[in-house]
Structure formats: structure tokens, C-alpha cells
Length: 326
Image 1 (cartoon, rainbow, N blue to C red):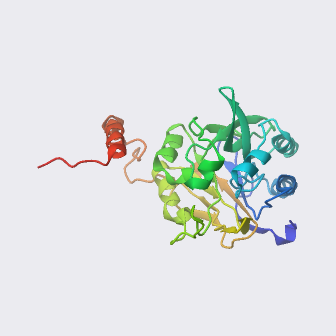
Image 2: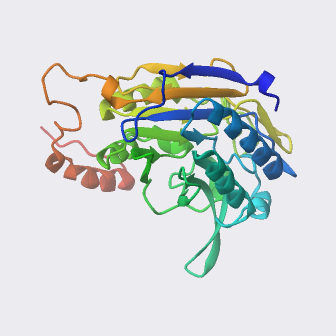
Image 3: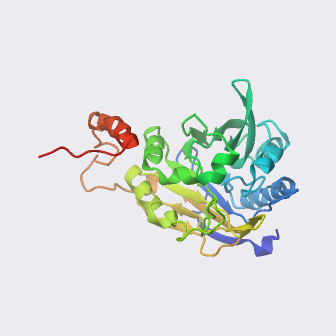
């Protein structure tokens, strides 16, 4: 990657946010390498992008889903490229984060020993601004047959962690489309949700045919609503360009975006190419979302009423909710 070919979209103030009051976020929308040698190439690019982001004061830098090895992996390839969390790729990423005093979200293929067995996960490692590993979050909601053939389901709920004393939550690709998950992170105290993803235009079905309709562009369809109803900043960190596996080809949307807590679009990638989005996420610069003082969706919820959801879920699994006779 040449810096001359890297597009920038920024919305920043004169100085980086004060400690604990906000965060300068960087989203790298990458035309990443795939296939043999991809991990080394993508980590070389990570190091270069981190240097460029540091020059612009970025405090948290995110990369797309499965950035390190590539997304379009067969089960055999997934097992070949997967690494333990203390393997060479994440060790190198931690060193780069430490050198730049910059936190990172680095998605990778994780190999882990669970209950005495080796399992494989679509994971995102969280590295803080000191270069220390915070957690490796294993994707809990897998999309489609390919992901379920490649990976095991993670069991731990999505985490909230602090970067420069600012609370951040993460979701992985398909998980961004579930309102329950973003609400969970908001209730845990997240003020920013970042969702690395690999959203393409069309999906290749198990029979090899292309889906009849394109994958929905959730970046403008649902994420602004989730940002507004949870009063959080929301960032979608997608891929761009193409990837191939055998005769199948993925064309990524390149629809990365950073959204404000009023559902406002702060910056977005308008072209499916290498793009670095940078925005200052400062909640104090936003006013109330509702006219009445001290009212919001989070405060006005009535959790005791929502216990019925578990009953409805059980009925749905059995065959759908049956309306009572009137």
C-alpha cells in the first residue's frame, strides 16, 4: 500500500479528546491481502497504517473482520492459518501498538484450547494503548454456512473495555445487526461501539449460486437507529475490493462509517477502496435526544415487562407465537 493511494475522511477538532471524555477513532477500510502469505502482508500494512494514523493523533485503530488471514477461508485453510492468541501475529500487533501508544482492534483467526479440545474462532483481539492484550473476543453469532463450517461459536458475551479511560464495546460483523447486542453493550456502559466486518454485495450460496438479492447495507439502514436508541457512537469497519476462493468471488461493499449518538453520519467511505476514516467521538458535544429533561430510551425502559421475551423465544423456536383467541 502506498500512502498516496490511501483516501482520508476526517472529522476532528483542534486537539485530541481529553482523557476519559472521548476518543479519536481510526477505521481502516482495507483491500487486504488473502491467500498464501496474507498474514505477513496484512501485518506489514497494519504497521504502515498505524504509523500514518499516529501522525494524525488516532488513539484507537480498527481493522476489518479476519483482517490478518483474509475472510474467504475454507475449513482446511482456516485451521492452517489460525493462531493462538500469543502467536506471532498478535505478538507483533501488540508491539506495534506499544510503539505508537495506540489501542487496536485486530481481527484474526484464533486457535484456542477449550475443555481439552482445539477449537477455531473468528476473533477480534483488543490491545490497549500500552500494547497489552485486553481480551480476544470470539464471535458468537456466525453468519451462513461458510462461517459455521470454519468456526466454532463463541460463548462469552461481547465485552466493554476502556481505551484512554473511555468505554468501548465491540461486535463482529453479523452481530451488528442484532439490536439486543448493541443494547447490551450500551447498558454495560459503552459510549462507542466498533464493529469490524466483511460485508459483501452478494452472498455465494452453498450450491455455488449467487444470492438473488444483495446483502443489505446496514451501515445506513439500521446502525444509525442503533446509535440513536442507545445514545452511542457507532463505527462499522468493513473491507473493500475483492477476494476469491476457488471459483467464488466476494466483492466487499466498502461501506465503512462512523455515526454519532444522534444517528448522524460523521464520516463515511464513499468509495470501495483503501480508506482511513478518523473522527473524534466526544459525547459531551452532543445534547439530549429527547425534549424532556433526563429522559432517554435507556432510562425509560421497563425491564420487568421484557421477561416475556424468553417465553416468546421458546414459542418461536417451537414453531412461532400463537395469537390468543379474542
